[in-house]
Amino acid sequence: MKRDEKCPLLIKADEAAGHYQYITREDGGWQYLNFAARQLPRGNTWVGNTGNHEYAIVLLSGNYHVNTDRGSWQTGNGRRDVFSGMAHTLYLPRHTTFRLTAESDVLDIAYGWCETDRDFDPVFKRPEEVQVEIRGGDNATRQINDLLGPGFPCHRLVAVEVYTPSGNWSSFPAHKHDERLVDAAGTLLEARLEETYFYKIAKPQGYAMQRVYTSDGSLDEVAIARNNDVVLVPQGYHPVVAGHGYDVYYLNFLAGSDQSLANTPDPDHAWIFGTWTGTDERIPMVTAAMNGK
Image 1 (cartoon, rainbow, N blue to C red):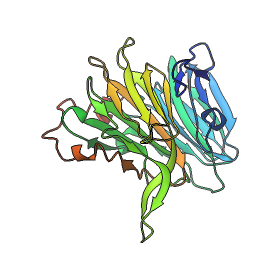
Image 2 (image 1 turned 90 degrees about the horizontal axis):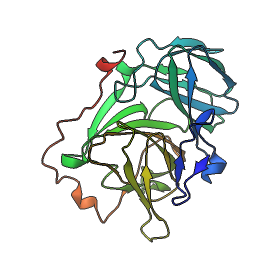
Image 3 (image 1 turned 180 degrees about the horizontal axis):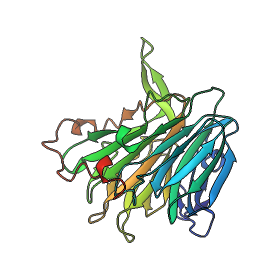
Image 4 (image 1 turned 60 degrees about the horizontal axis):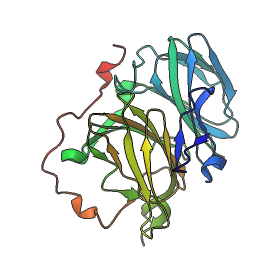
């Protein structure tokens, strides 16, 4: 893990490593979430066993086939890059042996994992099965693709990918999910979740800016995230803005108290909800029909 010297929450991509991102829960200083991203040339394999963990593998670009002791799957219409279609997502339960082989010149994948004591079935989610949500409005419009959203049959993992057009705000108005709150009826109001933001920028010189802050000011960091960087969100509110001229993608993995995205907006900015007059016509940025082209 290559931590930025100026912003400790920013993990820089290490292009010389086998994994250009590899962040364990110990690295994050938290309880559950691990994250990695790697590239494999055609014909190379990744062999492993999930052990006491559940895994979710997200196809960023290329194609692969995977053989496991729970089934076999193959992508035939992988996207050229994250801005050229929708993800294939493979969920593997604990104690699953797998062998994943690259079937493109370069295979780019990201995956999150966390410890579990529960058993589930594997799931191979194809691009056409991904539910899309358009969130926000005006220059805070963004596209959210549900990969392992709330209600997915797993224990703790949540994964979504978010597309933010050039110059737009995202994860805004800012929200937090760092304490578990329920109302008098037992309804979950906020989950306690650890989170990673993994970035891809449409142009290599581009960037996004992400602030991570708490209301009491004990944490207040601004990260300048470039292609393949990760921002850790251990607590607090965490809005994002895409640099003007640069479309931004980020993949969120979360794990914690609940398989949920229940959160609390920053009360200082909650008034913004409902003030938008329209949605950005650049959204949606990607569709399943773009895959394989």
